[in-house]
Length: 137
Image 1: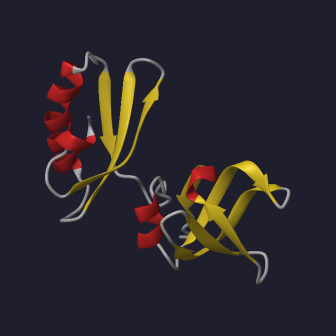
Image 2: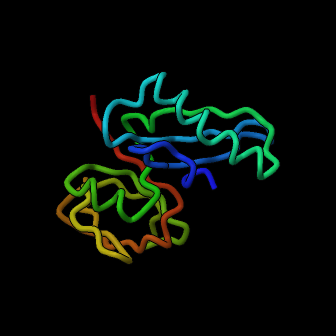
């Protein structure tokens, strides 16, 4: 519902409810910065669609930030070569948390080269509970 009403050039990264009255929408932009003006355009575009669905709470729109969430396979493909933190729902080799460089990303899984050595781990997208870019400033 939200994604279909976004203005041109906007990409929905994540949408989540905080409590029952605040909807936080993280958007990225392919044709410029995610600035105040752009966030206002997003709110104006999605508000009517949300109202039609019966939502009358507050809407917060922002950039995904430097440690942006990776919520879709295409995000992993786009950020091959970047470092990420990943938490999976079921342990893999006795672990749930991984940090490493995204080496490859296919349609069903992706490969991380782990930070703590030369080992790689292949993780299915369906097992990801949370993933974010890990950027050092």
